[in-house]
Image (cartoon, rainbow, N blue to C red; front, side, top):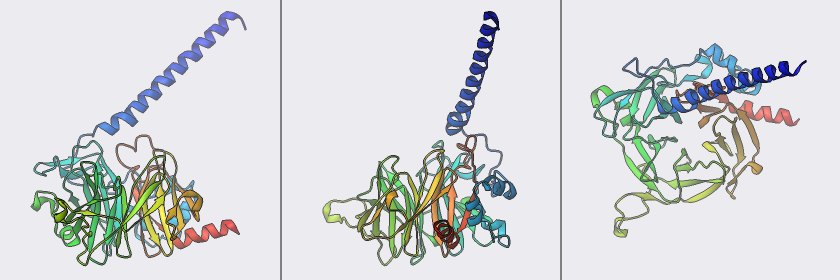
Length: 377
C-alpha cells in the first residue's frame, strides 16, 4: 500500500469519526439537554390514563433479560390484571395549574414520577414538573381495577420525592420544602377522595405543613408503627433517616412552641439511622428495612437490611441486594408484595434511558427471599 493510499484511508477514518462524534453530540444535546428543559406541546386537555410507553407484552420482553426480576414480578401473576402492574398515568399529559396559586389551568407534558404509597383502595403516585412550570400532582389509581381515577393538584412546585400513608389516621403525607427547609405535608384521605379538579379550580387543601428539624432534605418517606420515617438522598456520602412521632390526630408533634418565638410548626426526630448513599425510597417488611438506591443511568438496587438497635444500614451490613433497571424511585410494601416505581418513563429521560419502565411493578417478597436462599445453597 503506497503512501497516498494510506493518507486517504486515514482521512476517511477521520471523516467517519467526525461524523459519528457530531451525531453523538447532537443526540446527547437533544435527548439529555433539550428534553430536560423543554416540554412538547400538549395534544389533550386532560390527564391521560393510557400513558404506557410500551404495551405490557413489550414491557415484559424488555425486562426479560433480568430473569430474577421476571420471576419476582410476573411469574404466577397471569390471573391478575395487567400481571399485577399499574400503568403510570400522566406521563404524556397531566392536567394541573400553571402557577403556585392555581388560578390558571394547564396541561404538563414533563411530569416526572417520584413518590409511591398504597392504601386499602388506591395506589398513589406523586410527580413534579421537570421544567418547573407547573404544580406538582398526585395520581390516584384504583387498586382493584388498575384504572386511573383522578389527579390531585398540590400547592406549589415541590419535588414530592416521598409519599407515605398513615393507616391509623387515614392520612397521606408528602415531601416538600420552603426556602431550603425540609417539610412534611399531610392531606386527609377525605380531602383526596373529595377533590375534583374541574369543580375546585385550585390545589387541594392540605391538613398540616410541618418543618423537619435535623434533616437536610425530605427526599423520601414511609409510615411504620405509628411514626413517619423521612430519608435524605445524598449522591456520594452516607446519609440519614429520621423518625418523627405523630399525635392522636395524626399530626406531627410540634416540638417548638409559640413561647419559644416560633411562627411555624417544627418537629424534632425521635432518633436517626445511617444509610448508604443514593437512597431513593424505603419500606419495612417483617424484621427488615428495605432501601432502593439509584443514580442517573447506573443500575438500581433494592437492599434488604436486618433491623438493628445500632440503626446502621450501610452496604457492608446488608443481608441481601437485588439489581434492578436504572432510575428506581420509591418503594412500598403491602402484605407480601413490594411495589416499585421508576421515573424512566418521564419525557425528560425516556429519550436515552436503556430500560424504560412505565409501570409500577408488584414483586413477591417471599420469592425474593427464596431466591437469595437458593443462591446460597
